[in-house]
Image (cartoon, rainbow, N blue to C red; front, side):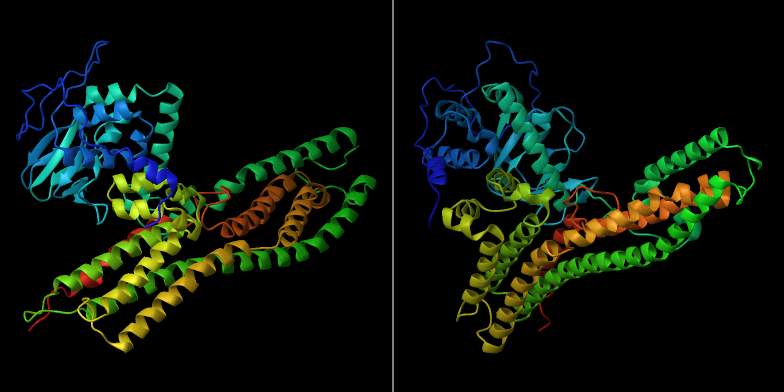
Length: 549
């Protein structure tokens, strides 16, 4: 397996057991109380504890810490001291590791063996985000940000964990430069915000891909956030102020023979000239309306095309999962054989990584997951294995692109499973359909990039913007001759709707929020796309895990 020089450098730091001299001989190597209170203040002469470790334990902790960018920059000597500061904890199934809302943040943990479940507000997160396994780091965020625990973590099986106390954590973190520490915390928070969206911890539209509406008239009138009104009211008020200023200037500088609330005298020389200008303005209204509505229609068509492509990707992934589940080998009792279960799990894991990296390559807000630190954080939170992380950090994988590599993992594992004894029925028809679905999947996700790149020519968008702006800027002069002071209200309404239609069209042209034009309306919640596909990656396997005999 090819690895980048950086990856080789990271893991070459995994040495034999650090110097165990001066280790407290009374250091426990047995089950201990997991919630021992500790002193929160770090004294100037504080020295981290040392717990004796076997060479294999040292290698495991060093490898785990090096794949987490929080500790990647620690000097070798400091890293060895941190490894020695971990103490072992044995938990039984059902034991509480940490509880949501706890402010007593005493430890952070590394899972050595077994698995833990994650719950938020009493509900278990969907897998893979709801299950933490070997190599996962738990609880460091609350300690880093000094925030209450964000989730409840329970031992799903009998577990062995390593833990470091708060004082030692602060001691080793304080070895970093203040600016480096600040940058680390900011980047880590950005990455975790993205992962939380994928996991369902944070949702934009209450779990929907786009903001939903109710057909009730009164409900629609009460809405503000995420509407075009929220986006266009400022320009409407500005144009109303300009219209009011024009009206006031005319009444002060022109001998007006009409009342304040009456229509201007059309025979007045100034009003007559404004009325002539207004006729030309009315001619442009039809042209502006037609071009703007057509532009909006084209923009919505692009938005809908991308939405449909996202749904097709989900459909292809579900098709592959269903084909493998229904073609899996079974024993006499109708249960999956171990090989059949493993090949489905491997394909499902690769499909989850593929779908995450697929959207991360298109949505700028998710792009941080494609960075080494983003992948490192995904590893720490149990979203990929160390082997997958190391492979994706290799030079060959980087040049190919993470989503393409994970796509190939899916295809390779499915084909391998279709050989005799691989866990999937060795049938040419099934193999052909699976390969056809995977190739169609490649074409579908590649098409998303084409949709985004060809969304709208600059010349077209530029022309529409100038046309609408010119129409709205001239509206105060054009309408005053007909309506007088009442043109203030009319200009506001016209500006609101024409500017709103143009803004809506441009919002449709940014379905992933890459332009940061308006993020509270029709931008898709990518986290929902990914969560739904993650659920589908195991749905078909679990659905017929046992067949009636």
